[in-house]
Image (cartoon, rainbow over all chains, first blue to last red):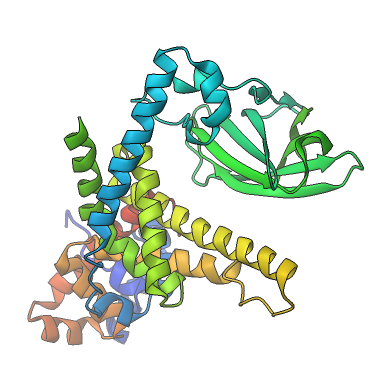
Length: 228
Length: 170
């Protein structure tokens, strides 16, 4: 026999759908067939994940998306494009002081398709680089922006990974440490390999009361620090 | 230029709004105006980061679900902070932690199942969710028992791939 007659039994087996007779035969077969045994173990975790979904979730008629959503999205797109054109116009005129006065909130450092508006960041909110406390694949920079309510921290970070793409993204937290040494967690996120992420943190501390900003792993180790 | 940007948004809406809508309605405990705000903000973020769309559909979905969940959590934290300052009223129950994680995972798995072919999905509904044996599923779906076995075999493999794409592994 060239093909294994049991080769397609693996899924019905892990789902619990084989008849008792088939199941017994297949279990006997598993003792002597490493290929079938390994395909069973590949699938064995799936029923556990599937159990998180209820049958209603799968069979219920999905609720239609509100009709107002698309028009409202289109409005937002038009509005943002107007703002962006305004910012680009100002930058082209080298009106750096005008941007410093009113443009902080509309600088968007994230898209490749966009002109480099952020090159003219207002003074006092220059991007500062973190220094490594321990060796790690993460590099980061941040801009600390004085707000009426405290300080906004615009963090950009890159997680460089070589070789294997890790199966799971690595979680990190950003802490703000004030002049008394009190640490406050202001953001958590998952670093995705080889992609620049922009994370925003918010602290009620005034900019001048922040002694440092740290990036920590979820088990509390500080890996990067920015002293102000 | 304007049109291509508007088209991009329409594309995003058509491809992802339905999946996000169901998730956000659950995430906000059925508060549809809030759910709509969350879906809108999530899709706007994707529109500002078109790189998201270069990924496979599965990982784009996983990204969108995560953004939506974080928006709901952030909003809840802000509201809690305001309540603590301004009133003695007990804040509404937290949507954070295990519960939203479970909801996120459940939605990711449901989304992966919804992207299987109909034949694959149906055979999993019968053999797993309705607890039918291969013989019963074969009768209900009007296909031979051998086909039920082979379909479940390919369906679970397709599901495993779809989940891996979304960053979920068994």
